[in-house]
Length: 227
Ligand SMILES: C[S@@+](CC[C@H](N)C(=O)[O-])C[C@H]1O[C@@H](n2cnc3c(N)ncnc32)[C@H](O)[C@@H]1O
Image (cartoon, rainbow, N blue to C red; front, side):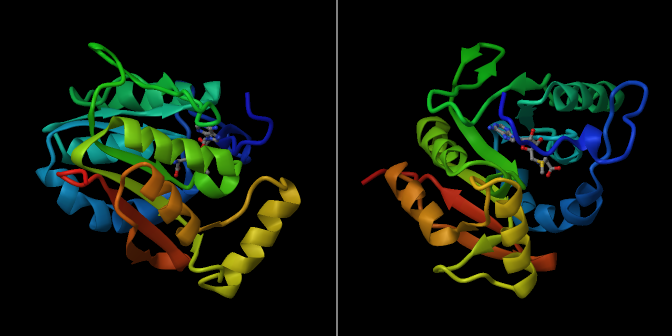
């Protein structure tokens, strides 16, 4: 178990009796994120894996908007897995599967579908995880995208990011310093570093969509034809 993770159950609010947690940022960011990913996901077919799903509210909301996709949420924390399961039970969506434990600190991580482990994915989604985890989590996310995304598939990443070594806003610089003070392995990642990992994994460089509050959606594509 990672020693330092954001635990929504310890942010001062009690979970609902059934375990559902409510992430404050979800209410601010889920529509802006959808504006960047919804076009692709509405046309896509197949399986979508979410990493670090947290409360489970993004997977639940987006699954309701894309009945043609099958959503697979995941996390590492038991309280978050319980929250995802509780939101799923409440939503009663046929295309939202039970949460699974996936630890991105493991280089050999895999995912499990009804038919077994690690099939090809139409898309992967990772929201607000890479800055509050060690750099190897980012590396393992991209390596996994290289293993699992099918041709034409996309990896969507949301959060604050640096561009070519520079913060995109003073507030992000302060946030970065506060993250590093809490855990020296955390920090706002640089898109240039993520592009390098994407290249190793056979993915395109990031396509950027600016989000409110100095956040970004980064979209990395697996080409239809690999060179
Ligand atoms: C800030 S929360 C974001 C949760 C959710 N994506 C959201 O935006 O509401 C970060 C999440 O990453 C998860 N996480 C941290 N380290 C992880 C790891 N090594 N592998 C997978 N998930 C991890 C945490 O448990 C937590 O749910």
